[in-house]
Every structure is written in structure tokens, then in C-alpha cells.
Length: 406
Image 1: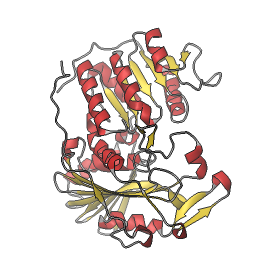
Image 2 (image 1 turned 90 degrees about the vertical axis):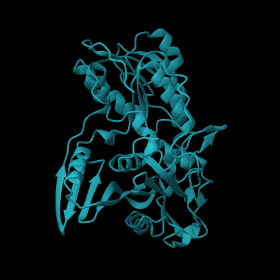
Image 3 (image 1 turned 60 degrees about the horizontal axis):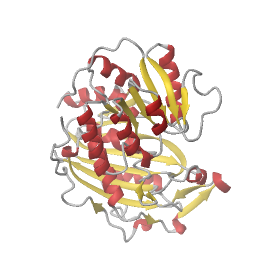
């Protein structure tokens, strides 16, 4: 399926930003840079919590919601949505209905059903949808493709994503939706693998060649929480691609100290470790390691280039299908198992305190190395828990009639 070609754009793209706080502040800074380069014109922003004076250009109109913005600002080229997870689907659908291309922050939406709705709307409108997995712009991904094609680390036998971060009590108090699975019956799915360390999962899947729902054969989850939240903060997600490649993601927000996350390619002759937040790749063969740092393409610029000349999107909606199966597996899994307090230590005071799970650093490293879950490793705080498989029939996809297509 191809998107109808559009006339070459010569004037700056008219852009609206929905959500100016949190990661929206990053988009504001990036849009200021692009506007200075005459690539975009930020014509409007929307947020129920207005930006502080001077945060947005004086020429940009300010609205309380996208519903107010769209009828008042016709002819938008791009809408960027950087808002809470549960709002992604309705805001994304509204943006596409306006005729604008869409940049939607990760995770795309909070359920597989909403993902299919968004796909149908994008297909019917002919608009482009870029998903904010920034690591997809890393030039290291092309380098990894080359080293695999050259057999530099031998046959690829597995991929592990290791995430070892810290989140304190204040993190879960910062908003009403933080750490929630649902709010008033609406899916949120704000867990370790779907939000803070979602890039680890998405990057591992991309390297494994798993982009669409049809590229995934199975997904298993084992979810835990040390914090007093609904969602998981310490989990293993074990994926198998249709080619039989195991991809295991062991992730936690309960370390004593944060460590930069990484994705490990396990080969028959060696390993390649991508520190994706730094675009740094370390290849080890026969005991000798070589490290190289790579550049990164900005996803907003990539979307603008796509609009001008059809350059492929680096993080398209279609290529988020495999990730959405992981999110769906987490969404439909039983509630995360609470970790017995005897295995949790709290460091810090008050809202600055954060949980540390006993032996967690060794646990996540062993899980990815052996493609095991925490219960399979025999960890005492994981006793009595078993991995949960995404319901049969969900993978590799669901029935699509094609009725919305033009």
C-alpha cells in the first residue's frame, strides 16, 4: 500500500503542537530550532495547562484543547501530539480527520483495537503517521544491519533488551495517570515496558526485524511491582518472531542507581551491544571489542522530508505493530504481582525515595542472557508467578475487512 504523492512543499510546514509540558517541552525546543531554519511555522499550541509566558513564539495561537484549535486554525500540515497515553487515540484520530499529517508520541495508543482504528483512519485519509520512538532515527541501526549481513558476530541467536532505571515516589505522583492501567474504565497501560523503557522494547524489535503484527509469533509477560501502583515497574517480556528468534526484554525502575539501557545482539561468534540513548555500539568478537558512536536523524525532520519527497518514515505507524502486540499482552495480562516488602529496600526520604528490589541488577542481566523470566530463574520474590501468553488468535493479527479504505 502506498500513500498518494503530495506536491512538493516549498513554504515552511504549518505545525500545531498538542501538549507543551513534559516531553512536549522537548518538541517546543525542537520546533523553535526548525522554525529558525525556516522548515516549519509553529502556528498554534494546545494544552489545558497553558504555557508560561515566552515558552511559545508570540505568533503561535494558544488553545485549551485540540477541539478548539482545529476549527480556528485551518490548513495545518502537521499536528504533533505529546499528551498522556490515554488521549493519543482520540487526538490522533481528530488530527487525521483535519487533513494533517500526524506525529504521535510513544506509545502510539493504549490498545490494539485503537491501533487498528488509527491505521484505518490513516489509510482512509492518506495522511502520514510518525510514532515518537526516537531511537528509530539512530544511524547505528543501519550499522547493525550491515554487521549482521556480513556475519561479523556469526549467526544471530537472540536479542536481549536490558533496562535498569530508577523512578521515585514523586514520579508516580506527577499526574493522575502515572502508574495506572486504567482511569475511569479507559485504558492507560503506563508500565515500565510501555512508557519509560518502551524504547528498549521497540529498538530490540526493530533489530529483530519485527515491525508489524505479522512479524510476531508469540508474546509472554511476567509483570511485577514494588511501588504502590497499578502497573508494572519490574517485568520480563519474552517475544518470539515468526522466524523463531527470541527477543527478551528484562526491565526495571527499581535499581539502586540508574544505568543506561542497552540492547544486546547475541551471535554465535560474538555480541553487539547498542546503548540506544547514546547511539553507541560496542561489537565484541573473539574477546576484542570495538566501540563506535553514530549520529541520529530527527523524526520531525524525517516527517517533513517524507512530506516533500516521499522519503520513508523512520518510525511509521505500520512499523509499530509489533510493539503494539507487546502493549496488548501487557494490557490484557493479570494485575502485576506485588513484590514482597522483605525483598524491597527504600532509598531516600519522602517523595524522593525509590524502591530497590533485592538482586535486581543480576536478575535482569540473567533474564536477557538466558531468555528466562524471573520466576524461571528461581528468584524468591517471583515465586508462584508464571509467564502469561498473549491470548491465542491475537497473534499475528486480527480480521480486517478493508471497508474504510478509499
